Length: 380
Image (cartoon, rainbow, N blue to C red; front, side, top):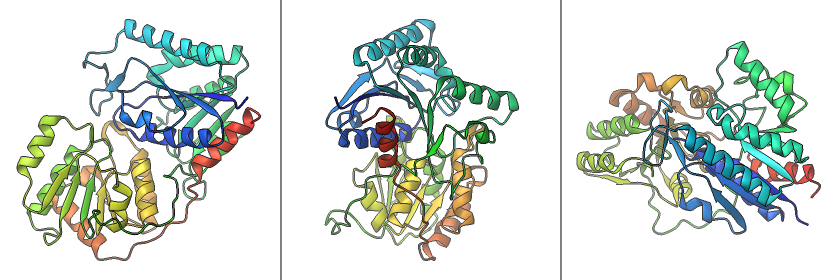
């Protein structure tokens, strides 16, 4: 018996949570552990990329926009019928898989709106003796009121065996975003950051361009202000001698993408995504992006000069905390979303272009370490 893990992940706006979970799932599969990945967001091709991964697709729920109002596939508000259908499918997936452990991405630090299906899953897992593990990024977005912190602590202590923190305490200790971390210290395990698998440095691909300004917004659902400011900065002459490549993301609606292309000045290429994004970063002149977990990992791995414009709508603090830490290390330029204008962005890009890249030493072995901890938990 190789052991089997049921891994639940729900992405809402971007796909960073899914990408991180897939990297951990892939590391588990490499160790010989079977993985049933239960996915609650819109279907994506990335889900079929890992050989040996069994995917269970729940009826999808996504965020309508940066307010995080939840909607179904057709854009309608989530109702009790959909909640019941998802809960029943999730519990059926557990019954069919009979997992040795359950891993929940984010909960209870995030995904509170999904308690309707996650609390029943935790209950049945504990009744069957299956350990329950939380997989959480370095900086969960947690409201700082004492009642909310106490609720999370109580849920961890009553329902979870381990909390895998995918970060490095020497870079950002978990008590920075979560002040009550000391109350669950016996459950916390720092894994290091979950980055793309390291590989020997390849020869530059002939088709991968060099010396560009690469503008990216992850999935693209919440990056239109950055895209507009970047195009305006380029139009006003910022690094106009260089080709700009704008990656608008898979989630940007088609009408918005068409409008960007129609408005783009000469010397700007606009695409949805690039499979060779890490290679683009290794060879770019400057990277301009938000400060999501996976994007920052890719930037640091590439050693790219970078400008970070952290997403900060609806009291989101995760990206800002991460970007501020890197700015204090003088590793990146920071433009706060509230201060974003074509002029402020252009000035930051030009500052980044004039400096030498700064390497930041952080632990990026999080995928392998997470798989190791989970495998040890189930005796494999």
